[in-house]
Each structure stands twice: as C-alpha cells, then as structure tokens.
Image (cartoon, rainbow, N blue to C red):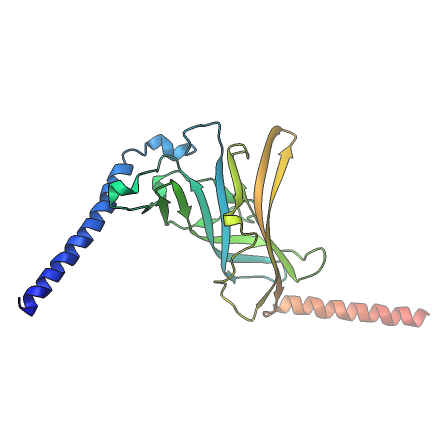
Length: 261
C-alpha cells in the first residue's frame, strides 16, 4: 500500500469517527428537543411540584471599572455560576455513544429567576451563553455579567470599601427555589481577577441567609458575596479638594480652640 493510499485510509477513518461523534450529539439533541415542551420553559423543572429546585450560585470576579471613590459606585465584570437539576433533561448515555454531556442554547430551557437585589440601576446584563447539560439532568450556566453597585465603608473600618452582591429568586419562596452556595464555596472566585495596583482584597466571604416577612409565612433565602477592598487608585480632584478643605477647617478649629485655652 502506497503512502498516498494510507493517507486516504487515515483521513477516511478520522472522518468516520468525527461523523459518528457528531451523529451521537445530533441524535441526542433531536431526542431531547421535541420532548422539552414549551410549558417546561416557564415552569420549574420538576416532575413533582411539591418539591423545590436547589440552585447553586457562585460568582467569579474579572474586573472593576468606572469606580468612583467619592460615591463608592462601580461597575463589576463577573462570571456567574448557576447550577440546578432539570428533570426533563435526563438520558441514558449508552444509547448515544456514551455521550454524557450536551451543550445547548440557554434560551431553550427553564432558567432560575436569580437576580442581584442590590443592583443600583436595576439593570443587570447577563450575556447570552450556552449551558452544559449532563445526562443526570444537571445544568450548568456560566453567563458573563456586568453589575453596577455601590460599595460602602465597613462598620469596623477594616477596609476602604465593602462591596456586597445579594442574589436570590425574584418571585419564588425558598419552598420553591432554594439558592445555595455553588459547590459549598463560601467566597467569590478571584483567581481570574484582572489584578492591578488600584485594588487590594482585604477579605472575601459569602453567606446564605433566610428571611421571613409579615406578609408571608414562607421563608425567602438569599446568597450574598462580600468583598472588602482597599482602593489604591487615583483620587478625583474633587475628592482631593474636599480632603484639603476638611484638613484646613480642622486645623483652624484646633488653632482657635488652642487660643481659647
């Protein structure tokens, strides 16, 4: 057999294998799509409506931009991590060439109505992305996000600013949608944070809280991420002027007080 013949055979085998993998993925998609009824997109993904949906929530910080040290307002670029089980998306991998994961557009299925409660302008951007579905029905959605929030000086003054991100379901109680920390991680993922000399992370933690309101007997849980930051970037002229004027006033007060003694 000539070298050219061997090359043709190899190309044919590679094409056949690639075609088989693509066929398994296409067959699985064709199997799931018609079974995922339109009403499934708008109702919780459960076979038993008496149960609740556990939604894991995580946050990865990428960058901080347009931060105003005078007001504490800033824009935070992140990746959200949302995971839950959709009982309408379960299959037997052996029937599809062992395929146990499938990537599909996120607008094709139900997604939890998790929002950032303390967004300052009530506008949050969650960019379109694919979801990864496992044969067990577990769904992982990692959209890019942009949040505009206000950070405050912490009460213990352990840092310049404390930035809080409070997430929860907009309409469901904890009996229907239960938010929890993603994989039990009790902090923001900052490994991909665009490090620069403007910021120092002093503390980083996350908690889950449960609240009840007078109107309703059901609990309403939320998951909050806290970042304590020291700001080392440039200070606007207005801030420097305010500080300078304040220093002069304090100095004059001290001098006047000394003359009276």
